[in-house]
Image 1: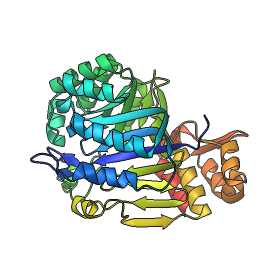
Image 2 (image 1 turned 120 degrees about the horizontal axis):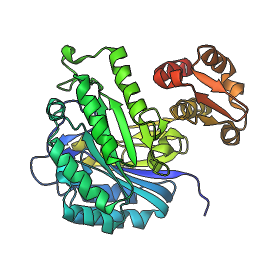
Image 3 (image 1 turned 135 degrees about the vertical axis):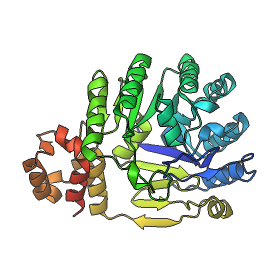
Length: 363
């Protein structure tokens, strides 16, 4: 079966505790899930206008692992009424403290086949600084449960928090565990968050780059296929690859984004506003051909393999140099990209300075 790439993202914004660094759409949940939330998601799914064959499904958050088995069953029923799925990758993000034998079995029985665990660190002082509600021991217990049931599982890690030895410790523990997929993210100081509002938390860029390079060396046996992501083939994140290929995707839930055809849309971030009218967009932008070309270049140049030039020509009807020849020449002169007959890809320096590539493309 051949179909245009398309994926589905469902945002569950609720958290039992708000992490000190988090800039994602989230809402503190002190009691049960609002009764209206799952029915509202089902209505939004049912009213979607766009592709109906999906290759990926991703439950993100927030904390999707807060959902009960029945909540997930209802959502899967709504999704199967509206969409068809072909050999899908079905992912769920989980908090280590939510991982129990019962929940792991529920996820497995429902057809979830990829579990991404928000570990962040194996150093307890670092976890405390980040405001996480688990410790290193509960993280290890969660990993043992998940990998006993799932071949395809992943870990998220955060670096850029002193001391450097804490990151070294986390990398060593990670290597001992041999996860199929690892995401490593530099701590981002988001204004309005407890960590982001404290100037003393700012780290030297060269020091942070050194931690990134330490991860590159430690994870040399993995395919460093995207700036922040490492995988043991074939355990790449297919859903995120849709984003990095700038393919169509539908987002459901507060704050979720969609790209359908040439329309990029965003849902209201406020849970109450979204609940009042699920499916109504806070913003819709009709992207021009040039917008789509730029976004396609930006996203592909996050990948080690870069941009397949034949793919670009098939998608846009002309070669990439027609619209971006001068920019590409400048980036090549700066040592940030490499152009061959088959592909345009970032150099090692281009991986480190990807923001510079982005700035050049959008000027």
